Image 1 (cartoon, rainbow over the protein chains, first blue to last red):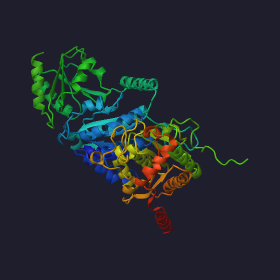
Image 2: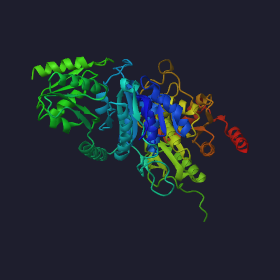
Image 3: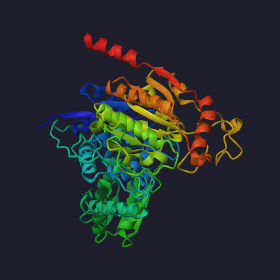
Image 4: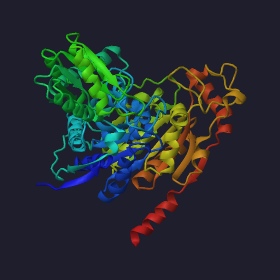
Length: 353
Length: 258
């Protein structure tokens, strides 16, 4: 059995990406993702990889676009304000059907906001990482081990579906340390990329990586085809974890750092005889709508808990579709809710059921 | 009968969309001839900008990537770092390279990225219908400088070759024009050198091509070339602003001999 090592979230992510075959990292300094880039700067030159500190977040994502167009696994990492700058490039990647991994270690916003943990980029990640009709894959790990595992999943599914993938973290997960088992090196199988612009060598027609379609009918058809792919992803790739939901009257829905806090609150609620459970979305896009809809048949109410003013709660409401009440509790601006705060919410809602 | 002139193999056999008298066609041909002569089509990847030449991806037979406005040097950096043996060139206009993409331009240059940049300067935004560019001349009338470019409000035009030649990362910075046969021949030599430098691993090379835009200048093609000679060339003198090709080749062969 592989050895357990103690790792910081940001560094574990970097090591996992290297294990997953990524040799091209482009970034720009920003708190609280700093350790990830620093780790890459230290390791990449020693293994023949590229760590490049770009002149801006805009340049960094376009370097990812270029490297991805050449057919290699490429990534960038940033925190909330930096992701806003990357949104142009992410839209171009989606429009050009290019994979690529984007890490967002979220901090409080809007604007320069703060540097403490937040989940207030949910809308940005799942609805509008850039202009135009498109989606990206969004993963929300809640432990450092899961961060490592999802780096592989994000690269694999991004390559499979030819679309950008994001791992949505927060400053708490990025900065904390946990024991993890790293994957064995050299056990990856990379997808063939016959579409890449890597030099035709007179062996094929020239490849064009492009998102421009001046003919509206052609652009509409391209978008429709892309959304057919998205529909297939919604069918097959929804992921979530449930805890104590079988008999739950109240189902808490929370992801990432807040899901860990909610889990503690649920243990405490159960001890007091309240039938509460938690559904933790692992994929934020595609959102685990099917599992929530299923629970809506048995649960009496839902409570979305987020480190924001309430963003994911809208997707919970869409999934529940009016069948049961959906409540919200959140802290924002870099404040992390405590288990006792969440327990109070659970008790209040349970008292009214 | 001997063939003395024909379409380069790496230039696609399609009709280009450029306006009559536009010089993009000549510049495309010079690049394609270079690619043919250096026998690099199979490993070349070109980057099309946003602007009139956005559809360059349909005109070259090598692999092509279309980049966001101004981002071609960053995309080129990604392509080159991923596949260092490939030959990467960007093809950019003045708005793309010297306005929205100035940060990417300066930093790719100062990093000495081993890429080739072809910069087409026609002192105007062509595709959007003739707005003031970072290289529009003082007093030049455009859609967005209808009373002439007032340098007190809009600032001065940027001389890109002069600016970039101050950076240690730049190997070649040369300004050429394609207004007459003589200058076209000089332009061809410069473009070829800019590609050869990359093949030889010598670093960042930029060739600025002073170009015309008869449509948006509101001039007939021949009048446009006259205007170019009378107005642009005095502000943008042709010539070599920096050329370390020979020094760097010597250094490289010296390194190789150690």
